[in-house]
Length: 107
Length: 116
Image (cartoon, rainbow over all chains, first blue to last red; front, side, top):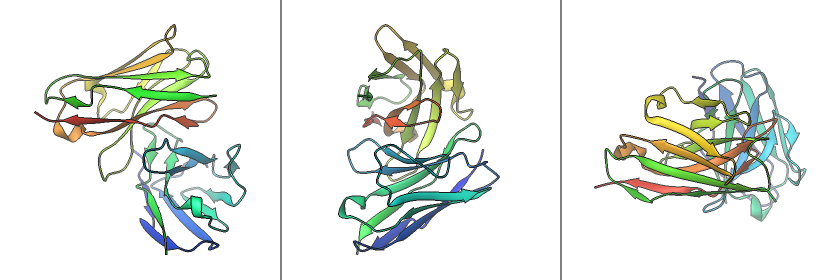
C-alpha cells in the first residue's frame, strides 16, 4: 500500500496568512492526488483534484501543486471559514490511501 | 443536487454483522461509483470498498474477507456488510461518489460503535 505522510499535523495561523500543507507519498503517484476540507459534523468537501485542478465552486485562494511523491496545498490568504481539518488522498493505485490530516486553527 | 446519506444501526455487538446503507440522490448509480470510507475516533481515514458504475467491486485487501458491497439501483442505494465486528471497527463510516475522479461528493457519515 502507498503510505501518505501529511505535515504538519497542526497549524496555527491568522486570518490573511498564507499557509501550506504537504503530503508525501511512499512512491510516485503520478499526480493522482486530491485535497479535502473537513469540518466537524459536515461531509468532507473536495477542494482540489489531480494535484492542481480546482473543484467547481471552491475559491481561488486554494491551490495545489506537486509531482512524483511530493504535493502541496496552499491557501493564499486565510479566511475565517477556512479553519478546519485538511487531508489528502492518493488515487493512483488501490487501496486508495489518505494523509493523516492537518488541523488548521486560529492563532 | 448531489447528495449521499449514510444510515446504520449506531451500536453493534462484537462478533455481529454490520449493515450500512448509502442512499444517493442527484445522480445514477449506473453512471457513478460509490465507495465506503471509515475514520476511527482520533485516527485517519481508511478506504474500505467500492462498487463501480458497471457493478464491479473492489475491496481493501486488509478487510476483504469480512466485506460485501452491493447496490440496489431501483432504490438508489449502496449496501455495505461487514461481519465479525470488533471494537477496532468503531468508526465514522462515510460513503463517497466517484466519477472521472474519486470522492467528489461525500455523505456526512454515520457513527458505528462496536460494544457489548
